Length: 310
Image (cartoon, rainbow, N blue to C red; front, side, top):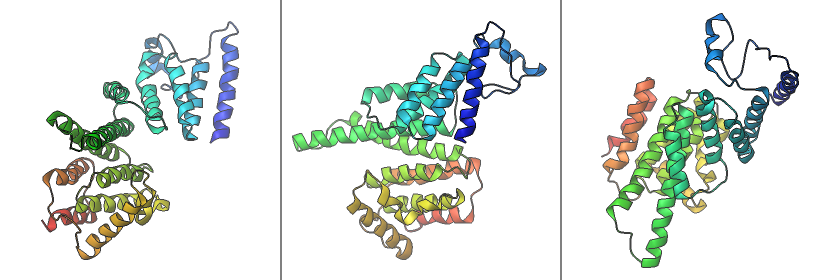
């Protein structure tokens, strides 16, 4: 794919030279950034007071190439540059891509920075799986910051942090993160290769927050179910928890053992009480899934098993 993109960049660079020769630029019949130009949609060109020039298109394509190479900082820089040069009608699309690269990279953001990003992404007119992925990651990071801050202050004072507002805020970030990850999954095509990785994030949140094993087992099974559909078998589920960076390796083995004990023998280590707020994650997943897809017998079995022994 990259050689083809490089050829297109070369074509655009030649086009830039033509544009600066004093001649009026020739509109191509097909554009990566607009509709096909014909008599029925020439109005698009009329409405675009500042059409996207070839140099800006090159910058955007380079941003995509960096993103495909997982060079997220470089991709963000290209998209930031392009945002200053394109008409407003394309701002939402590029802003999403810029935010995606910000949240996918290795940068560590402060709480206020994340809250500002959250506000900016929420107000974008576009909606879809990508937007929900970005929002989920922001909520995820905000939750981690709240938990880290709470743990740090608890160690200093020797007590749990008081304050109903702060406690509710942490809980909301956890709930918001899981629900927006679910929204991102539901909005994505069923064979999207990113679906298993989104379930990985959900599992990570459930495990680190000591959610009931039945809930973890449900998402564990659902993740594997869709991993196969997405032809994502190289992330075969029994070993996936070993790859979690946020969970100590000693915990991974215990979690996998507990899941297998529960699924194979119905044995639950620890509390057998299924809290309502824990069950809400599974109920929310089912409610959203029903809106877009038919519930198979396999999925129904996984769902019923969560509540079977309560």
